[in-house]
Length: 132
Image (cartoon, rainbow, N blue to C red; front, side, top):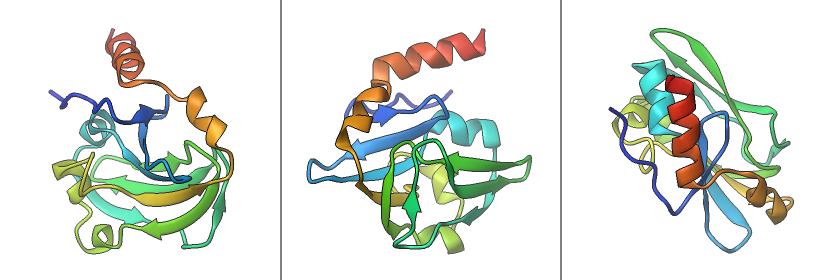
């Protein structure tokens, strides 16, 4: 069973989480539910620092023993940092999707995009719908 989704983040319908740092930057990763569906993650393709990403466009790739999945940018902006630990230890996403398994940090192009994402409660409701 997946861990509860932290209330200090917002979520995309594509199962990414976004933690707003309040300074125009956010940290992004995939949810515990997403890593559970993927099973054992064996490789993460990270975007280049400085790359501009558009909301809804693929920004990274997560490969598991089962499949290869795009990670979509839940917001538009510039990649400020990437979690290089994932290159050596991609299973960090399986172990701790909401902390050590973060994928990128983004400087927001438009902070209002955060309002289009789901609260933890709304994301939980989406997951309940998907499971039925």
